[in-house]
Length: 170
Image 1 (cartoon, rainbow, N blue to C red):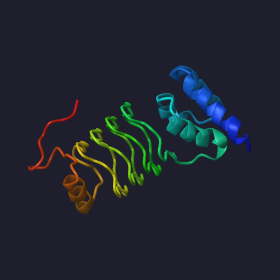
Image 2: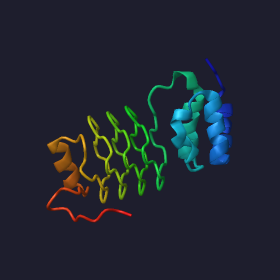
Image 3: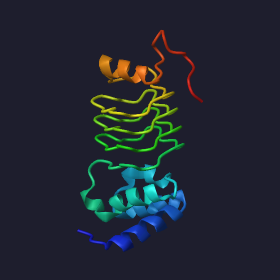
């Protein structure tokens, strides 16, 4: 088990986020966590330094993505695997998660405004107080009827709903 003092962990995370995507990927490969390739795309800011610190703290014990309060806004995360991920308070504003695996993901208080989740797998997801205005779900595979209606009332859009505009986000 790797034990790094908090300040060193913060510095390591900052240095990681200062690197380019290929350098970040090489570090993830060395740590055995290259499956979390989305970390190569994250912006350098305080929210993400804290998030990356959690990944670097004990890479051997990682099972599911813990992204609480991370800033993933505006990123192309198509095909990402966030199964059982804790995405509470995560910023996914204007992000693309087309064809993402989001089974059992927790989006409590997350910002998904104008995000694209078309063709994402959404079984057993949690949407408590999530901001979804303009979020495009496409056919919304895996949502219950109640979830779908609740999300729609909060501004989410679906491709197969007669009362939605059918425009697909760019």
